Length: 231
Image 1 (cartoon, helix red, strand yellow):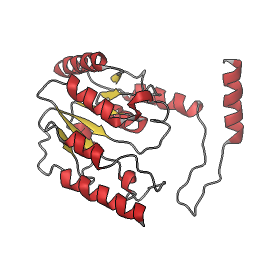
Image 2: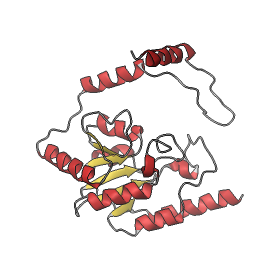
Image 3: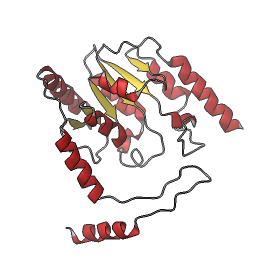
């Protein structure tokens, strides 16, 4: 009961910080947050596992006329229809309170569609591949703080420090000016085909009482053998 009350307090506090009159014509970076704990942030993000570090570093590196639009993951408050984990308190009032002190940072309502926020942004910033892929599919650049499968893709900028971010923004603005930011269907098809060939289906929870037992053991074994042989 205590945990339930605490989560609802955090949720209500988040709602109190939401910006209702967003101007999507302004220059902004869309930064959707990811559920924690997750392997994307634990351990692959390193010190960036603390979202305050990446958000503050991004803010300090952006031109002054840029804003950051932040949308929390509904799973943090366990309100998503597809929520798969309960009882994690990765964020608290202090986290939201410190970030909201800067007027260039705006919190976004859950009802806002990611597609709308991505399409109107200068770039997406993220610690997870889901939003990197959404950005690339919608022909938007992405700034990522985690070295993952999208890092080597064109228009995806892996940033480890402020200098990297400034160089990324400079490149993005230059490409925007010259209409160079495009991700072709051919490029994406090659990427997803390669991904399909080098991955396998893993069972996952679709609810606490509905565990999917399907698993591609043969494909997993072949990929493991291929890796060991270095082929």
